Image 1 (tube, rainbow, N blue to C red):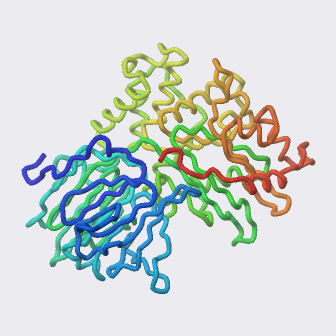
Image 2 (cartoon, one colour):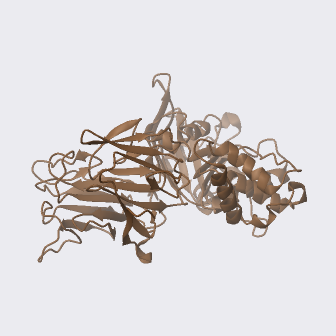
Image 3 (cartoon, rainbow, N blue to C red):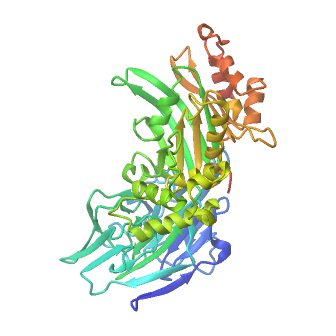
Length: 520
């Protein structure tokens, strides 16, 4: 740690990794972590206060606002109680309705809430800053770095930077803050993962005001009174939330899919089922961001379309098989993958070695690093294939018919690899025409944890949700014994099916939706 850096707060172990959390900065000048538990009121800290969350600030109302939890949608909302100074969220002020409270604002990962006077570019000394997070785990300490008297502050992994951050999602020199004529500017130095200020990705450079929140990689930095306060968040797990109202082509004249809504969590292995023309590939393309739909796709609370430069690196297609060269060693094989997946301008040779070593340890092949691929057993080769997919920093893996054209043994091998990727804290989504072949060799149970069924409605002439849930729930919902038999139920009669797509779409629409998070 540099002389000008010091630790200002430690995060207690029990407060790390809480699912719904507020990180608060007020006149205490150190971050305070507050877990959200159901409905909670926010207000000024004074002797007779009965608010659940109390902040030290005289510009905060006695009952300034409320954090409201929805049991139906399992989301948090914020309401401003017609306070004198109001509440800003991501730079926009909430407005009251007819002199009453503001409309509920649905909180998303990384939202920045701020209590201040009317001008955010001239913050009040008693302004309050709050950061909402669903499940990021805080590092053990918050560090403060003085920037008083500095004209330039460089941020990145390289030791030559002003602020050095041990975060592989950050480029060697990721961003620079410059002070010019009494103003601060932050510039993205051609980084791979971008720079976000107050929840929004910047294009190239942006004016930076005191109390602004900067997010690069897994690190959060706060500009606070001639200092930068920062902490590294970690989160291997992911949560994918898809809400597609409509995906249309030909200037909106032809709808391909509509009313698709589901959530997948880390370790979910999701089977996508649907007949010809139901929109499976269209759905995949929208999740990849290749086709933009009318709707919202969130990964860990971050909007795919609004933060595409950053988010596109988190979602990827999985090739059918990794072509392992038999005469290469395991470490060499994985380093070759790292050279492809980790850009040279962002990752040094040492960075790549570290990533490979970490991944080998995670998958359990570190003791095989100097072995030739030809010397490995079938199970060991599968683990190397899994490691190769984990070298990058993707959180969601999508596979379009990975078992196509393969024999039964190869199909099983491929599905086992994909399942292991999911078990390593990722989300894997698969289109498969032989879903019943993907079973645990010991228990005989399906490898899939969730099933998403898209059926082509004869009424709407487009793909719609017909089911989302676990494998046992899917078999019960469609009253079948095999996953493959679901296709028989929803396919049209001219394709040999029973033509009951509309029936199941309506049946699913009428049943209570389980859209919420698995953990709270």
